[in-house]
Image 1 (cartoon, helix red, strand yellow):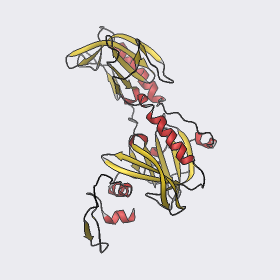
Image 2 (cartoon, rainbow, N blue to C red):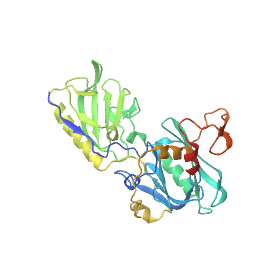
Image 3 (cartoon, helix red, strand yellow):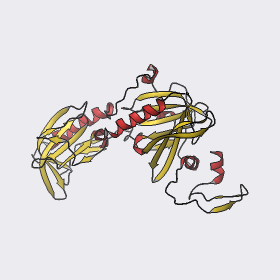
Image 4 (cartoon, one colour):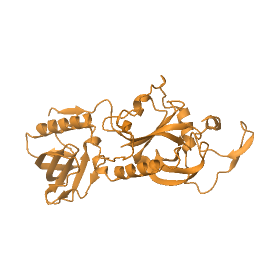
Length: 330
């Protein structure tokens, strides 16, 4: 059978909320489609990795981006999916002595990192309240972005629609195949996701966001979603492909929050200043700089001290892959 095929755009899947990155080029700092700036704070210190450096903190619906005022290329991006805990504690700051700071415990690529941000505006709780509220909004809107199995997404044969969700089609007689066996059910096509549930058991279901799709095609067999009625597969594939392309042009990612006292300029592009004409690629330098944010909370005790000839001192042994020279200059 000839395949009806639609491949993803060159921009690829959304990484902004799923990764931690340093030294981003200007294009990666700017908002992607579906991403928007919720709040912008111009006096925030990256106390953990750049203590004493004033910068701008952008809070979007997918991530937090900090950019140094001294050099645009000194920046970092923390996706909300990487954040495990958010706390407020006192931290030593060069610019504010000892002040209340926002602590983020994160996990990415099997490593744990800690980020500390201190607001340099005395008496302003905006940093704490906005980040916590946006993170809660992100956590409670996962159906827009994550695959969900056996969820409470169907009631009395009707799809429980999400805010801003529109159902464009309902296809009966759709079989969800597992190996050579399948279950007959119903497929909903919306502007946000594809939802299938078994005809005889509504709790046997799957919600697949359009954001998770990388390719749409038709095969003769072993399909995740197979239209049992002959002759409708190509038409359904074209419909899914069309909905997917419309979604990619203007993604609905579910995170909503309004900052009442935020300046109106946050609605514009997150960066208006001209970036340095330098592109930073992933390198050993980035890896060593990431070590400045490393939170090795899993170790039971300090590592044994070892003599370092560069320093002429005994220091705690570094984790594998890290170099004392580059850590010193990070």
